[in-house]
Every structure is written in C-alpha cells, then in structure tokens.
Length: 310
Ligand SMILES: Cc1ncc(COP(=O)(O)O)c(C=O)c1O
Image (cartoon, rainbow, N blue to C red; front, top):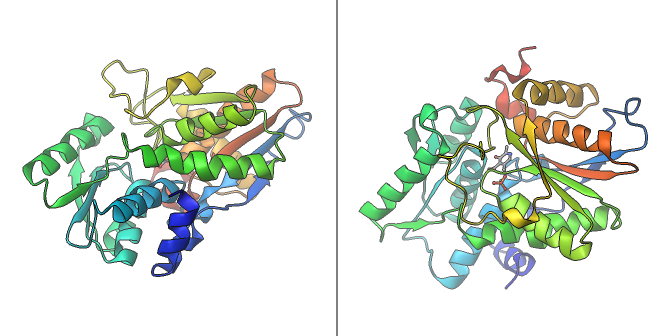
C-alpha cells in the first residue's frame, strides 16, 4: 500500500495525518538582479503539521509499521534524530496514542527539545561533540537491551524514509513546476530526501541534476551530516549514484542566505540557508535553470541559536 492510501486510511482516526504533504511551492526572489535568468523555488515543508520535511518520512515509517503489525500501542517507537524527525515522531505518537523515546544530540535547539517534551515523548541526550553518529550508537544500545519493548524505526536505513519523498515530495515538485525543474539542490541528514527525490526526478527526466550541499564544519548546520569526514557513518539508505555534484556549504554563507530569505519574507531554518547557497552557486553556472530547494523548517525553531543574532 502506498503513502497516500495509508494516509487516507489512518487520517480517519488521526485527522492531523491527513495534513501532511501537498505543500506549496513559492518563487524565491533573492537574486533577481544578480541572476535574472534563473528561477529558484522553495517547497514549503514548514507547512507540515510538525513544521518540517520530516513529517512525510516519519509518517510513512510509522503507518507502514502499524499496517504490517510490527508496531502497536503496546510498543514504544524508538529512533535517533537531530530534532525535526523527533518532533514528527513525538506529535504523531501523541496523536496515535503510542509512546515515543528519542535519542538526540544535546545541541539540538531548545525549541525542538521543548516541543518534543510537550508531546510527552522521552528524550535521551548524547554529547554534540561526539557527532550525530553517537545518537546512532546510543539508540542501538537501547534497542539491543530491550528489543521487545521497542519498534526501532531506524530512519537511516528504513526504506519508507526515502520512499516518502519518492512518492510524494518529488511527484509534487514535478507537478508544481509542470515538469520544468532542471536542478534539485539538497543535503543529507539521513539521505531520505536526496535518495527519494533524486530517484523519482531522474526517472521523470534523466537530465534533472541533483546537487548536494555538505557542511564544511561540524557541528555546523543542524540537520546536515558532514559526509566528507572519513569517520562519519554513511546512512545505509543513501543512494550516492543520484548525486551529480557535491558543494561545500560554508556555514557563514548559509546563515547569510537565511537573512536574505528573511528580507524577501521567508523565514527558514539553517539547512534551508545552505540549500539556497547551493542554489545560488548552481545558478551562477546554469542558463535558464529552474532550481528547486526545500524550505525544510521554520526560522522560529532556531531563535535560541546564533542564526538570528546578526
Ligand atoms: C532541518 C533539516 N534539514 C535537512 C534534513 C535532511 O533531510 P534527510 O534526512 O531527508 O536527508 C533534515 C533531517 O534530517 C533536517 O531536519
């Protein structure tokens, strides 16, 4: 059963589930003078009920597990997250009446932590300086110690993560651009977005380019992995074959892009700034490009960080 069928079925008992997806696509006018021939669009993932792109993946993983019987209300949903997936699990678990336990790094913004706790989920913290991978090691330890208690969703390896973007995000981008999209600029947290959207857009038109931004420092940009670090665990589901090019995302430039977005009325989180910096770099080289990025989450989620200090 596909995403939309499961969504329809579960929305009967959990109406908020029906609100996930079908987000608007808006034109971003930051570079009108500098790059007049290029169209850049942002897909407003902050419009999802949990306020981020991760609602799609988390909902699909949870719905599929409920459907298969792997998950029921006697178990606890368990996963690691940089924050946004954690919020998605937390609100969805609360809406479905299923307990949730999350492992997140302690540098996740206080806005994320408070929201997760507000929905009644339990948080285990790891030290930020040990990297996102420490959350993976910790979540495995918890699961191994009590496997019958948990449904370990494992968003880094669960195929429903990338399939959510393959079946929904990418289809919406294709329809909303009338098939004109030439470049999709994104990054890697779990690899769900790039793998799902990349595969589907390339099936639609093999000439669509998938451009991947990678932060040049850690901890640099919440949500994005520093893939170039040889010690960094590469997500199991990441399909590197869809990536046409990697771009270094300079953290200062990414934050400057957040400010520029704010000045045209769009208020986004850190990773969106990095995606826009990538889009600008692509736009400088491409003629008549139609570039799509995700507005991954809303800027308010970062009020307690240095992002808006400038
Ligand atoms: C703010 C933000 N940006 C980007 C990403 C990367 O998305 P994905 O996990 O699909 O690679 C995530 C999620 O991990 C995120 O929370």
